[in-house]
Length: 219
Image 1 (cartoon, helix red, strand yellow):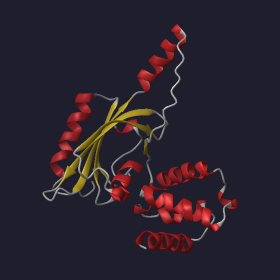
Image 2 (tube, helix red, strand yellow):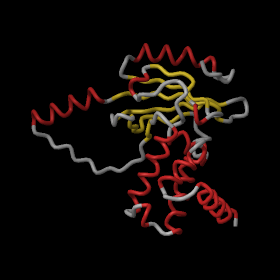
Image 3 (cartoon, one colour):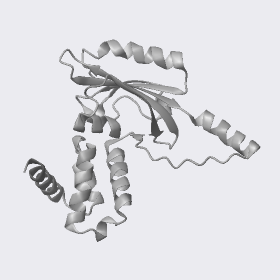
């Protein structure tokens, strides 16, 4: 069993309670954000995302820690998530704060919409309704490993550039590293090694890019 922040221990039984009360289509997860590489300290119905205790923080959690965007909020509700199996989830997050109002833990509820999706597809086919949604939104990726999260973030950014890594010039690679840094992916241990491999660069080169980015921000 993983060591849990004493402040968060009281939430472990809540995770179990909510998991049983809300049913097998709802995953309940408790994150200890003092260790983003193994942030999941309690989980119920982990089959929804394929995660278990010891899994890393998600891309959304990393972004929250990186930019502090939600530090003034107590929770966010009903945003879209995607499991490692590609299933759509309706997700909500509650921020657990200490006496100094600092976020130390995160309680997430992820509802699988897979059964509803299948029902929708059946109804659409039955009554010939086309589902045309062009809305673009950020989604939370629920990965099972540091490598997986880093790889997904990397592939997403590379796809947006339209240039394969082996054809990128130095400035293009720096821009990719900058976007990855903004996403918070470098908070994960081992991310530099994974990103270096994907960009066909050395770890030393990635660290050099990060230092240059930091200097540009500070100047």
